[in-house]
Image (cartoon, rainbow over all chains, first blue to last red; front, side, top):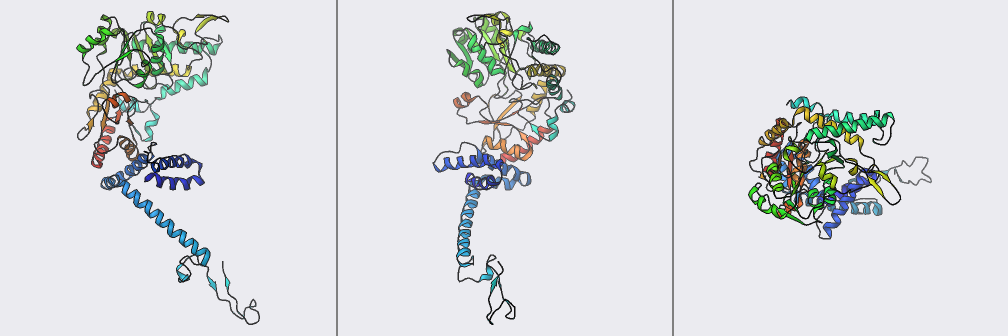
Length: 139
Length: 377
């Protein structure tokens, strides 16, 4: 599962830096092999795991043991969290585009950071014509 | 042997690394690097072809390096020293040029001393937990050539070469020793051993990479056919024939790695100055300081290489974790001895290999980290 996470992380980094492209390619190859029920041959999974465990071992050997033992489980949790987070983000973006509110049409606009603020304009303002007051968005 | 003083010659060690991968590639001291630089900055010309000042200087330096190597291994004549790219090339040259009927190998050969012989008739002699000289005496009767690994890169085990050569000669077989892991770590005298051929690399003995040596007795080298031919291997040529050069040029085709040759000579000088017996004793002391409790020792212990596995932790993981946690560099995998690992159903292992620049303090750090790693399993 760490290969999938690596693909996502290195895939994003590779967009901005060519230095990460070989790693992203390696991660892709690893994921491709795994989804076609073959073993990842590049050793990327072991390298990423070992690097994390090695760094953790310097701080806490006990925690390192946990990370080493449950690495696959922890990876799964992160992958699931990633996809759940991705789904919520997609829903929020859809709502924001369609309803100007990332929480949906009936939700309180104050709970969405991206909802455009409404500015009350004084009717005496020169922009108000014929005594009718218009509302302008600040976005 | 003053290890701290020796360490000052190795710039890379100031970067805080713990280098335990010398069986793969040794580090280079300042003296060797300076000598290589000297060639490129002071006399970057051809040897053996050009008669100008620079050409003569290179020729002198190459001759000097050949003489140093001759003395270093106790050869009789400098023309018995053939410069190659590495031990692998030396063995390939031998396998393709020396005429024999059937070769005997051990079951723990590096791929470099296994694959070149696999196209010939060959047999495998099992070393198991130690070299059985009686059994060898019986088996060698069926062979006219023996090519054994002198010191194994697997575990540092050194075969009783002198006895082996004696017995093989009594049975009429010639002997080649793959000494890539021996020459850098202990004193070898080819005349005392009476070995017919010896091959080794420069990069494992503080020398530059891309350099190797094939030693052979003059009379045997004379009989051997050329393997690679071209520039410098002939005295004269016509459109349909050529006259072969004398030793050692006969086998050194094309423009040579002069910087490498000169650097290798300097490496041999450096090691001679320190003394290989002291280097060997130092390495044994380091291996003995390793806390082996809870580790699965692989191979035959006792040499200057420590091969192990940690139950429950993958060997590649062990190497990567040691690198990430404390900059400890070891090697993991099958160490180019796949055949032995396959025959013994072992996927791979970790190998810590030591040299003159390693210290007991570094072993202490390794022990501490191995202790933590054992708990991961």
